[in-house]
Image 1 (cartoon, rainbow, N blue to C red):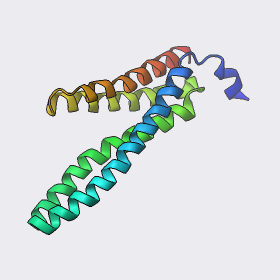
Image 2: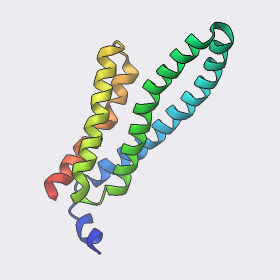
Image 3: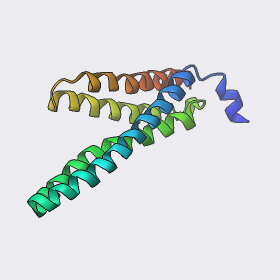
Length: 136
């Protein structure tokens, strides 16, 4: 019953829900791609170069896996809490963390348009969370 009352007071619910759904979709694609890449490259590296290359592959996988899982969790939180202004702070924190990871990626890995375009979703997500937080 409380959710029905708050749903009308959640001006950022559309931004949170849509960006959350897109974040879930893109992070799921990234996780599946990472899984296949890890299997293919890891088995080839292990066969060719031995344990050192396999360990390096695991390290790279973890550096890619953590942001994808974090983005998946962030998207799910946005979908679940889009109509709940009282949950806007947690959404805002996760959105800012995802945005920070994109910014770090842009500066550490060199400029790539795909990374810049990917940063748009966390920006929209944070804007939706801020709007909901102002209404709470």
